[in-house]
Amino acid sequence: MEKPDIGTLRHRLIVERSELGPADGAGGQGLNWVLQDEVWAAVEPVTSRFGLHADRLRQETSHRVWLRFRSNITAGMRLRFGERILAITGVLNFEERGKFLLLACKEET
Image 1 (cartoon, rainbow, N blue to C red):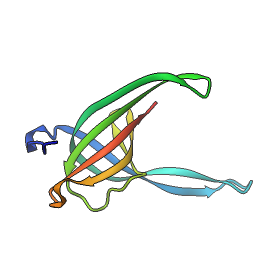
Image 2 (image 1 turned 30 degrees about the horizontal axis):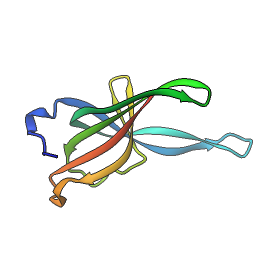
Image 3 (image 1 turned 120 degrees about the vertical axis):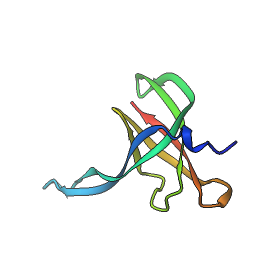
Image 4 (image 1 turned 45 degrees about the vertical axis):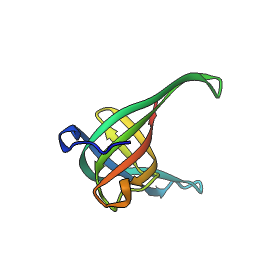
């Protein structure tokens, strides 16, 4: 695995974090996604599967996303890539040098 050249960080992504919404009056609470940041990144598709899940045909695509190091990005957040949503499932400080983050993501469909 090789770190990207800065010029390959050409995709503009929006980083979102979740917040609990107001109570719904029936004991539940909604989840809202709010803007955390906007970043330049390199998005690479890794795998794609098509199959049956919960009695529905579904495609699942995983992505590798590179961006400059940020300490405020964690698993459980998500990225907006145009109209697509990438759920962050893993965060790696590449080579533990604080220069790049490598994110494992799954596209939500």
